Image (cartoon, rainbow, N blue to C red; front, side, top):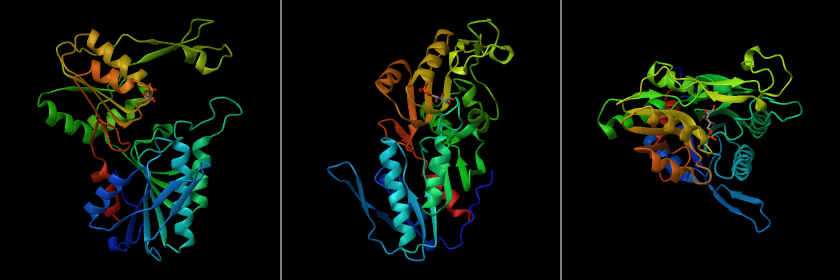
Amino acid sequence: MKNVLNLRPQLNHMIILNGSKSQSLGEKIAMDLGLKFENVSTRIFPDGETYIRIEADVKARDAVIVQTMFPNQNDSLIEFLLIAGTLKDMGVDKIIAVVPYLAYSRQDRRFQIGESLSIKTVTELMKSVGVEELVTIDTHYQHVEPGRFHLFNIPCTNLSAGRLLLDHIQEKINDGFMTIGPDLGSSEMVKYATGEERVLKKEKKCPICGKPAQECKCRITKKKYEITEVESELDFSGKNVVILDDIIASGGTMIKAVKKVKSEGANKVIATATHGLFMKDSLIRLKEITDYLVVTDTISTPVSNVSVAPLIVETLKNI
Ligand code: R5P
C-alpha cells in the first residue's frame, strides 16, 4: 500500500493541533514524531455554538489537525471546520486533516431519490476551509480498499487497523484463531488483514416474488428486502474465532455474528472493530457474550486497547 502524502519533506516544519475529540491520540502522534503538539482551546457557548482559539505560532507551517468525529458528529465537524478556517487565516502553508473516524461516510450514496450525499458535502466543506490532505482509518466510504484515493476533490489516505488488532489479539490469547467478517461489508477489511475473504453471508430476498434481490424485478426499495442468513460453509467447532469489522455502531451485526459462531460450536469468540461507537447498551451486551472485546482509539471507549497512532505516524513520516 502506498502511504505517500504529497507533503514537503521537513517533519520539523509540521505542527500537530489536537481538536477536543482526539487529545490523547494527537498527543501520542506528536510524541512519536518528536514534535510539539498544541491543544486548541475549545468551549461551547451557552447557546450551543462552538468557540475555538489557537494560540500557537502556525504561520508558514504544515498544520496537522487531529480530530475524530464521534461522539457528537455535528459539533466535532463544526469544531474541525473552525480550526481549519482559522489556520488558513493565520497563514499556514498546508492543512492536513487526520480524522480517524470520518463521520457521514456511511451516507456515501443516495440510497433513495432526494437523499443527501452527506460525505460529499462534508468533503466540500473541508476543502473550502483549506484542507489539502486527509488521512483516515477504515472509512466506510464505499468500502474503499486501504491506500490512496480521492474523496471527491481531496486526496485521501485510508489506513486499515485490522492487522494491528489481530496482532494485539494474538498476544492476548496466545493461541491460534480464525478470522472472519460478520457480513459482506467487512470483506475488504478481512481480506486486507488476513489475505483471505472469510465472511458470514446473508441473502436478500424479495418478500413479493420470493427471488434473491439480484434477480428480482419488483419495484421495491432495497431496505424492504428480507435479509436471511445463508448457511455458512465455515467450520467453527472447537476453534477460536475472531470477528473483525470496521464499525460496531448499534452492535446488531456483531451480536448476531457472535451468537451464530457460538451456536456452531466455536471455542473462544473475540469481537473486534476499528471504530467502537457502541450505541445504547451494545458495549455491555458484547462484553457479556464474548471472551474478549477490543477496538482502537479512533474513538475513545473503555475497550480502546489498541492505538492507531503508529499507523498515522508512519503515514506522516513517509513523505
Ligand atoms: C456494514 O457494512 C459495516 O461493516 C458494519 O457491519 C455495520 O455498519 C455495523 O453496524 P451495527 O453495529 O449498527 O450493526
